[in-house]
Image 1 (cartoon, rainbow over the protein chains, first blue to last red):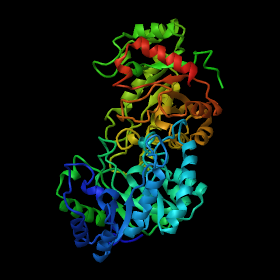
Image 2: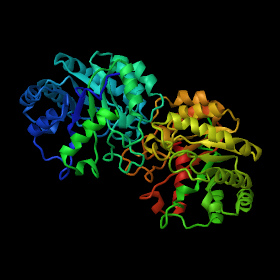
Image 3: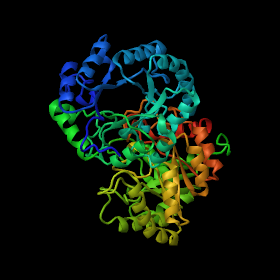
Length: 282
Length: 282
C-alpha cells in the first residue's frame, strides 16, 4: 500500500466538503482561493461540482494545473433513470461530459437516480440504466472521459439510486461493455458491505474512484451528517486495502457533507484536519 | 405460491403498525381489543412487543389462541453487541426467551446492535455476536424458541445492527451452528438487494420470518416512514417468491412504523387496509 503518512499527492478535495452546496453554510471562498489553499497544504487534486464551474471550465482546469494539482473529477450527471430523471437527461449528460473534458478531468461521476416509474425493485431499472449508458459512453470516450458509477447506501434506493453495491455497479458495467465505464467506491455508501473485499477484487480495473469520509455511529441525517475520517465506524484501512488490491492507484477524494459540524467550521480548519487525518488514519 | 387473495390465515399483525410505541400516536386500544379486531378480519396471528405483555404472557397467549389465531412472534431482545448493548444483556435476553415461551410464540426477534466498541466495520462484531448467540441458544432451545436474526437496512449500521443482508445473517447462523437460530426477512430492510433471491435460496430453512411493508420512493425518515404494501417501490411479489422458494411457509407479518401517516389514522382503517392490500398486492 502507498504510504499516506509521507505523501499527500493522492489526496483530493471534493469541494462539497467545504459546504458549497447549502446557502449560508461553510465556504465563502471563491474557486481561486480553494485552489490556492489546497495547493498550499499539499493536496494532489480537486473535484468540483458543475455549479462552481459554469462557463469557466478551461480557465479553472488550467489554474488547478498551474498550482501543480490535477482536476480529479467532476460531480455529476443528472439522474439517468427514475422519476426524477430530467426530460433532457441526454443533452445535459453530454454537456457534463464536455465540461469534464474542458476541465481536463479524467472522470465524471454518475449518481444513477432511483427506481424507474412503472417498475418495482432495482433489477429492471439497472437494465434500463445500462441501455442509457450505452447511448452516452461513446461520446464520453471520444472526449477522453471515464464515467464513474457511484453505488449509494441502500437508504438512497427509491429516489436516488438503483446501484447499492460494487456488485450492482459491476453488473451494469459488464452489461454496457464499454471500456470507459467504471465504479467509484465511496466509504460512506459501502462501509457496511461484508462482501466488499470480494466485490472489489471482481471489479478490478473497473474501480476508477475512491471516496473518503466516515460513517458516524449515530448518524442523524441521511444526507448531511457524514463523518470526518476517524470519527466513525468504517474500517478505512481495510476498505483502502480492498480497493488497492484491485489495482486502484488513483486519487483518494475526501467528500464530507456535514451540515451541523464541518460545514460550520472555518474552511482552513477543515482542510488542515483532512490532511492530518489522511496522514494518520486512512 | 400460496393464494393470499383467498386465504388470510398467514397474515399476522405486528402491533407496532398501530403506533403503539410513540406516545400520542395511533392505537389507544388495549391488547384485548387488538386481538378481537384482528380475529374479526381473519388475521392468522399477532406479533407483540414486550412492553405490551408485562407479566401477562400466559393470559395473552391463551386469549390469542381462543380467538383462533397464533402468537406469531415477540419483539425483541436487547442489543447483544455494540455500544448500546445493556450490561445485563444476557439476563434480559433469557427473560425475553421466557416471555416468548409463556406466550406460546415460536420465535423471538433479534436486532443485534451495532459495531462493537474498539472495532471498526462489521466483520469483527459479527464474530462476537456469534459467540453471544451460542451462549443463549441452548436455553432458547430448551424452551422451544427459535431466535430470528433480523438484518436491517445498512442505514442502521453503526448503532443498531451488524447484519445488513441475508448473507450476513446466514454467515452468523453457520458460525453458531445451533438449529434454533434463523433469519427474518424484512421487506423494508432488504428490498434493495439484487442478490436477495440467491441468498434466500442459500439460507433455505434458516428463514423463519417474513416481514411485510413497503419502501416509499421518497422516504423522509430513517425510522418512522415505512410504507403500506403497494405504496412503495419494493417488488413484494418477487421477494415473497424468493422466501417461499427457500421453503418458507410461515406467517407474513405486517410491520409498518409510520409516524406521519398510518399512525395518524383510525386503527380500524389501518387493519382494513392491510387485509385488502394483502389480498391484492403481496
